Length: 157
Image (tube, rainbow, N blue to C red; front, top):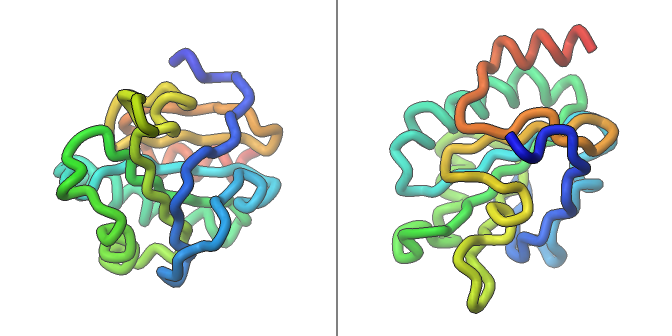
């Protein structure tokens, strides 16, 4: 993909909830996710693939990799279905999947076709995984990511 090897852009998502479901006063930054590897998961509440594959993969990553100090965030990229993919769905999904990580709500800015995360990271839909290494370079960006493979690669590194 075009973003592999590039420096990860700073997040421009404006609205976030923290790991306990509380609204965050300031937008999340990449540095808030630590200095090690970071995994960003883009989803939409109404996306069946997000629920059948994406969130279960994220749960597996989180259970294996969070104890290793890997940073996680989920971002609802509302590029369609704004009536269904609302900010209220963040906490619902956070609780449903037992993920005490920050969840962001990204809608297109006025006049833009896509949310900032999709534009900045050149994603093409949901579910979408982006993996950023400790040097803040994007090392993976795509729809499907094998949790066992990634865990073994990170443990080896």
